[in-house]
Amino acid sequence: MNLSLQFWIRSFILCNCIFIIFNILILGVSTKSIKDLIEYSTVLNGSTPTIYTIAIILACIDAITAVVGILGFWKELKIITYVHIVALIIITIIELCIATVSAVTTDPFFGKVYNALNTTINGFHLKVDIPSEYDELQIKLQCCGLNSREDFDKRRLALPHSCQYLMTGFKRGCIEALTEWVQRYILTVIGLCFTVGIIQAIYLFIIVARIFLNKYGKRLSA
Image (tube, rainbow, N blue to C red; front, top):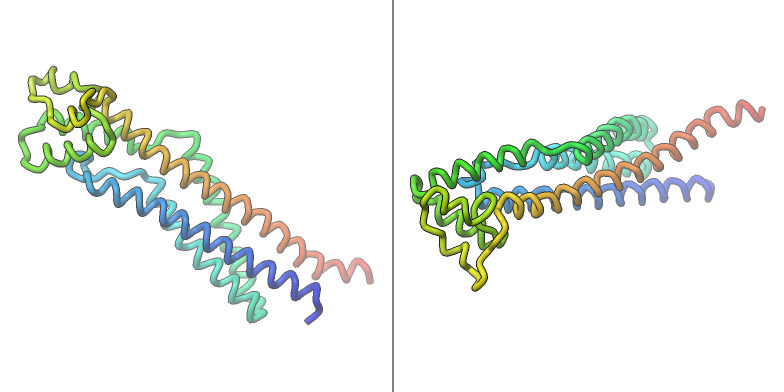
């Protein structure tokens, strides 16, 4: 094996290792956010952003494709390498499309969670676990009510002690606080998807260009 070919093989293997790391990060951020939201599944009606589920599925497939690529380059198996390239092209296109759509549109989660929190306040004392879970949510996000503490006054409900957790009390509503909290995770996932997608696109361009040159370059020079 000449030094030039050895260099490219090692570079491609390293790139795939980087792809795996990025996909692990996407999995970690998405699963952590889902886990945090599940803690308040009663008051949020079990809602989670759609992008998390899509990101987890894509990250798993992407990581598997990267492993296939490492195997293909390491063992110098052309068929496996070509399968890796084709699969990665499809995944990269989907990943960049999903990230773009998620960046320019509002996730249906926010509409669902608004309705869920509004319904929860209306039936605040109808379920035993609602007040305690809502208290935990308000303390964690430092918020009160749907839009403000006045939501409880309008419904003639006693103000939960969590609204007065600090001496000054929480002034902003939970829908605003929850939106900011979840949006941070969503933007992180979108950013990671864009980053790995762009890196993969550059990687694919280089590898396809090398295959083209190796296949047709010799014919042109002959």
